[in-house]
Image (cartoon, rainbow, N blue to C red):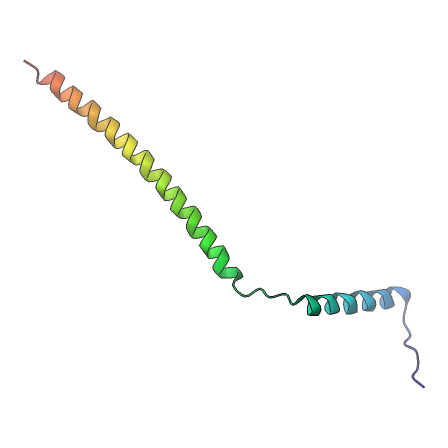
Length: 79
C-alpha cells in the first residue's frame, strides 16, 4: 500500500496548483512560434506609416517655401 504524502496544507495546495497549471498548459498547447515575426511586422507597419506622414508634411512645407520664395523673387526683381 502506498503511503500518503505528508506536508502542510499550503505546500499541498501549491503542489495542486502547479500540477493543475502544468496540465492546463500542456492541454492548451501554447504555441508561441511566430510571435517575434508578428511583432516585427507590426513595428515595420508603424514605422512605414510614420514615414508616410512625415513625407507628406515635408512635401507641404517644401511647396509652401517654394511658393513664398518665388513670390519674394518676383517682388524684388519686378520692374
